Image (cartoon, rainbow, N blue to C red):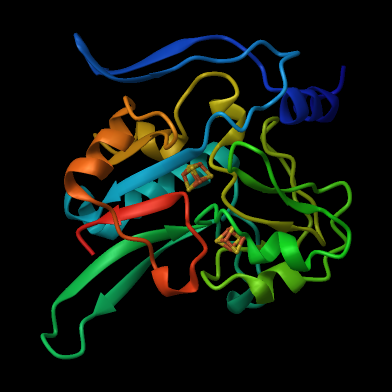
Amino acid sequence: MSNIDAYRRRFLLGAGIASVATVAPGLVLRQVNAKPADEAVTDQKRWGMLIDVDKLPNGGQGVVDACKAEHGWGHEEHSNAEQKTQWVRTVKVTEKLTKHEFKLPVMCQHCETAPCADVCPTGASFKRVDGIVLVNKHICIGCRYCMMACPYKARSLVHEAIFDQKPDTPRGKGTVEACTLCVHKIDAGEQPACVASSNGAIVFGDLKDESSEISKQLKARGGKQIRADLGLNTGVRYQGI
Ligand code: SF4
Ligand code: SF4
């Protein structure tokens, strides 16, 4: 089976080995039970992330670095800097009146009502029933409607030929891409790469499970959406903004 075939199988069905993430001996961050490879994705779960920007050094540059390392983007030669691939970026915000400044990492917010999927003419942009918003590279025609529709500037078009791709992250010139929430890891029962590298600043889990750590933290401390006024009910929430 080729790498692409192996990816597509995991992409559609999910692969299943349960795992536990530890950051130090005896300290378990969370556990995600992987589903068997032949079990369909279920809407009984909705995956999300809660990002505490106060706990992220350098405005979340580590998130960007972890994402690049996991998915292999950001090393392409670009003739135009404005066309750089950008799955996640750090954004500086200055409050007009108080001049209070903070930085936050911004990636695809995995919207419940995803404008990118609504406008896609081929169905390449789609939302899985567990809330993960993805692009099917095999039917993306590179029209970039989704990039225009996304209010978070979360998507990029690959302008250059791609070499040395990661087996779990197939990429292609002329197709659109964005944060996948590390779906290949989630389906294998692991955490997204940026979460694993965040020293607890990002909590990942099932927003529909009241007993999950992310649900407990959201209930206790709340979590803001960027541009909540748009009513997109994002799967990515923030504390400290
Ligand atoms: S953040 Fe943008 S790319 Fe992600 S689901 Fe929302 S509209 Fe789509
Ligand atoms: S969840 Fe994965 S793809 Fe999304 S920003 Fe984090 S590392 Fe990148």
